[in-house]
Length: 601
Image (cartoon, rainbow, N blue to C red; front, side, top):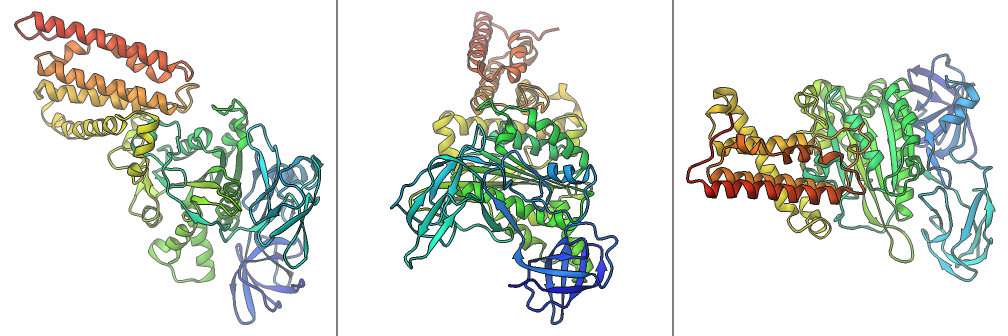
């Protein structure tokens, strides 16, 4: 389609009505005004169309030109994505800063992938090989952690007629030539360009039976998320949504992380941009940014770009999924994305639904979360990849009944409910274990039994039962006081306290406790549940809880969480042995005595 030129008729914030271009299509990219601001068509009429502009529109005037491009909003995919920091429409922020300084100038065009840098390409096919869409033709060691695979693009199938030898090449240089069944020859380069509004194709979805280990004990234990699954973390201001998502992005065992700060506060994105390059991946010891893509669209940036940012993030995630990687996408927050939808919908004059949100809010959220999943990717053989979706929701006043939270909960399968009361008591992560849930427990049970221990489901069930009983007893204690409870119920309260304080609380800023390997999580929970069982047995024999609270092992249990990652197994073995000795001594003492042990003064 040749470029046509029209004119601006009306301007309402980021929404611009235009005329003079025939045959314009929905979601086509246009250049608006004398500064050629980037816009996207969102409404088409008989003689006019409406575009949302991804940059500040102040200063635009009716009558200024509008140029059609014929292309949909797309992203560039290839080597160079990992470690990058983009704005909401895949413009690298460092390049924007170098061109315009700290305040971004309008109308700047910066390519998403560096076209001049040379990458070390290694061929994986030879002349005469037959390739289909998605097949690997070569690879590039993009970072010290991730090797980027160069894939045959969609619509290309045939025999390799030439392949470059291993060497340095730019993303635009042909590295391979394929002759199809009609005799046409196609050049394959290392870069692809993909529209963001439609998900990249795949063969079929497969079952999700492997957990995404986050290193956060409360989540890995009680509300696990499967690789390829969907989860939401709603909470009011100050409850820790962003910190929790940052923890996911830092420590989750996905191979690639895509983090989108969608309408996020500038200071929180700044913290991420400054801190993450200094962090080390716990598995490889390499910088975490070598497997991370950051998209920063802060709350002071244009709302139209905020609306596009999550689609850009989803497309980047699908690109790495198609290479066979497990990808985790963190969106913070979908509420501010929904506010952008509401603002643009209002300027278009569309009929509002509940609380002013457009009627299509639920379907748009579903389209986003449905781009997650574990799939068989397009290729000649068998290749699995996954995109796990985690979205923060910011309900006003912490009201979970508001439309964005409710629409999200109808879609996702894991719900981490942040509690204002827990946050006020400085209990972090402030996730309420009794109101949160995961629908992946049954899918993951086999993996947990094989990789942790056959008793893992029983340990989790006992811990949850203790927390539920603790909640019931707390209501009684508030009425009559703890002294009115029998010893067996006081033992329940103490066991629940150990679970909450020694297991569930986790410091995001402690160099060791910030991340907990799953094996360590299993051992910690097992020790606390064994202690609870032995305490209940001792109380049944007549011991007083106060006597058990004198055990020196309690100090060791309280310090389990800071046991180093590489030596935690020895620490846990020592704690279990000491616990056995102290309880054995108590049981012998009780057996030797004909009367119950007196309570400690």
